[in-house]
Image (spheres, rainbow, N blue to C red):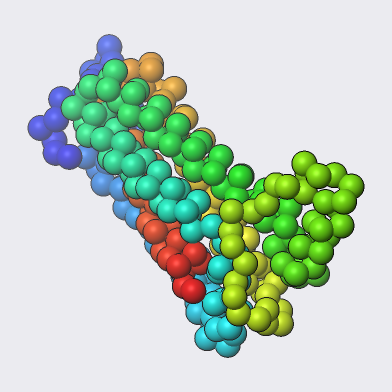
Length: 250
């Protein structure tokens, strides 16, 4: 952004969207951009600690991670990876549309980004539902596949159709190690926390969409779209790390 940009002004000649504690729109833009990068650094540090915990548990119990990762449906994770990458494209396009003052295209791109985020959450809901149904949970809530199969076999004698439904995930060939629930504790914590960030991003993008409909963004003012775009790219990047670490480690 530069001072040569045409900035909308009010009746008194004061630049619109310029807060009183800034001297110029350029100063406001650079301060907002720096603030957003500082916030993203705290997010990186936050998730960095979680990834460190993952690494420690993985090094201490490789047999657990090798076994339990096979109980996840990598196809679900792959679909969500493609969805988030596509949403990053539409979000980046939204930033460009805001900078060029393309209102209608900006509205379309923001709407597509929210829709793709909704698809991600829907797939994650299906995946979580399957894990709860099979008892692949944390702590004492975990149910081994063999115990679950025996319950299904008992149910088959009473409710044929209900027992016919089975998970698309095949059972591991290797013997089940102890404390498999450790993996699922990490799995639900990492993916759940990421899901909270996705939900927060959807709310922020929805706020941008409302403002875009009102025509608040243009060549002279696109800072909020740019800032939310940076946040959304980080959310996408974190999932790109989560997907292979949790689903493809077998």
